[in-house]
Length: 398
Image 1 (cartoon, rainbow, N blue to C red):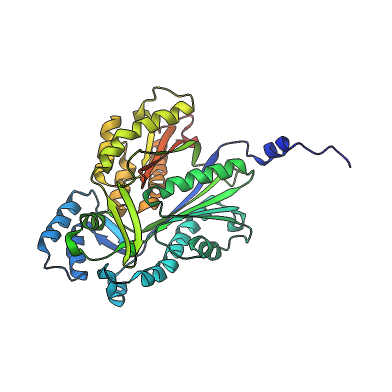
Image 2 (spheres, rainbow, N blue to C red):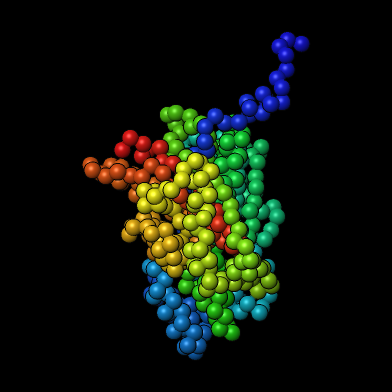
């Protein structure tokens, strides 16, 4: 029979990558309609025919003014809203129309972001072996991952996974799964795509629901894509961030702090005002455990770079205070919040994109020194905290 067959252990070892998973390309995209935050209360109450609700408009105005957001992008423009007037009232059965629109728009927006990530990666889309798609905006099968694979011309053998209703931690969860796939399948190249459009949860301010008013002040639309793979092929592939360690933590007894549910009138959500405090009380433990798993104890948080999901200004303020971070350490997160708002699971990919630009600028300065190690964190329903320790290869030797 020729040479002796390999043992199962030897076969398994041959299937695994030699090095850590790494980010090999990043792309982002937004719908064309951009709304200024200081004009949004007037816009929202006008298009929902709710200008008589002056107290609620005043509340939304106050939240917008304190949000740290300058502008947001949305798919649901006035023309689309005029064609679907039931979207203004969540007591009306508008889910079918919302799903119909989202089923096309969500993967198309993801395709725009993915095309940019693939172009930066530098290899053909047919070399992608795995696809992970995260969204809360879809409710149909075949789902957005199948449509995206077609739009990009991916191989029929691509292995697809859809993550639904993970909310704001969807990007972090997707990247951790991509890390596991890349490191345990030699030669794998994983496309992570996150895409959200808020029309699934858009309706008027009826009843004075505080969660709706808060959501109208925070959320925007966007898509982010990342190519993940281990053992980069030189000179085509260049690692932007190496993924050293990843974990997920659930804060006990917080099941009701953040929730989402799809009903006949669209998606309803609840966000407790205790979320910033709860995260502030738990993030440092997650960080200590993550670095401890790597044998690093007593890490100086100010020596790291930071990619934190900007769920809101209060969340960033609490984390900054608890960790004693210097001014500017969360600049990438605050910039993304200002320019795009909270785009749910997509947002952390925008932060990674902004962060790599800032690290590149720091490395190119004559006397600048970019941090070599850093952290990505994302938060969502559960309350769930995704933590990933990152290494920036380009920072070595600075």
